[in-house]
Image (cartoon, rainbow, N blue to C red; front, side):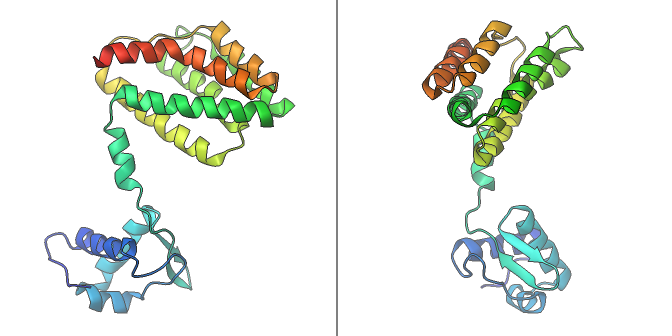
Length: 224
């Protein structure tokens, strides 16, 4: 490991450690050298090493265990990929989220409980209209309804990705669009719940595709 430049010590130290982790110097589950050893390897102060490690912990690459040391948690850095996703177009983001919606509905049809259906119905009834408390409040109620379907899928990975894409889409809409996208009516929303209740995954997926079609068509038009 080469000594780093002193332009931005913390960032440079973090990047140097990151390169070593991604390069396989330490394997997942392996404890990395202590602060004293890293100070010598990087030719920086212990405080700088501590901050660099903290950065990599926040990125999910390292796991700091009090009284035990710091261990490699992952050798896959997803932060850059997620940043690139956020820079993609709104159409691409929505298509990706729509794919998650479809698969979540399929799984929800197979795995839902009576409590899941009760919660979906309650959130659908509480969704109201944009005139009830304003656009932002309506948006949050709408998200809560759709998220309840994803939760009923029982797939944690889909839920995490869904939350990421929802946040990215909202940021993009607020920064790029002045007008409104098509808003499916209550009947279209209720059709998804009804399809999930049947336990038929293909019917649930079809209901979501039908629901998403007008929005995706409009985004395709806007992207041309």
